[in-house]
Image (tube, helix red, strand yellow):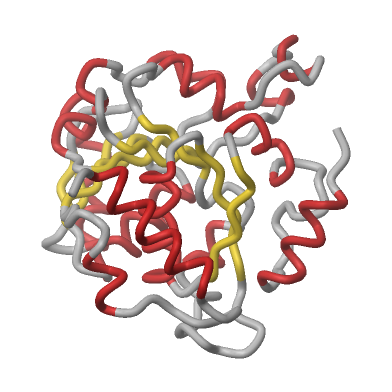
Length: 244
C-alpha cells in the first residue's frame, strides 16, 4: 500500500467518525511511522512544539538562525529526546519537518533535504515584521503556497498557525472530551493532512481540514478563526465566515 493510499484510507475513516471521537489504534497504524521531527525555528511556537513532540515520544532535532550552541538551555529543558543542530541537519534528520521561522526568512529554508518530505508550516504574514509582500497584500497567494513554491518537491501542510504558543501544551484534551478544541489544517496533499490530523490528536486537538493551500488564508491573521479557542463546529463556522 502506498503512502497516498494509506492516507486516503485513513481519511475515509476520519470522515466516518462522530464529532469529538478520537483515532483508533488501527487508524494510527494507517499512517507511516515517523519518529524524528526536524524543527527549523526555535521561537515560541518552535520551542513549544519541541517539548510537545518529545513528550509524545518523538526524537526532536531543532535549529535556529543563531547556531546550535545557543539552544543548550532549550535542549536541556526538552530532555534526552532533543538535540540542537543546524537548519540543514534538522531538514536532513527529520522524517517530518516543521518550518516555524518569520515569513521574511522562508527562502533560507534548505530545499534539497526536504524533497519528498511532509513539511508543517506554522507561518503567518505580519507586514510589520516581514515587510510588505505585494502578492499577499493583493490576495494572489497564501503564505503556505509561497513555502510550497520554495519547496517544490515537498508536501507543505498548514499546522499550528492559529493557536498561541502557550496553548499548544496546555489546551489539549483527550479524544471524545466535550467541547474539545479544534485546529485547522490545509494542504494539497491528502497524506500531509492525514499526518497532521494524527499529530493534532496526539497533542489533544480535533482537526478541521480547510482544503487546499489556496484556501489556507481562511485561518490566518485577522480572520474569525485566528487564535481563538473553538471546537470543531465553531471552527467550521468561523472558516465559512472568513472574508478575503
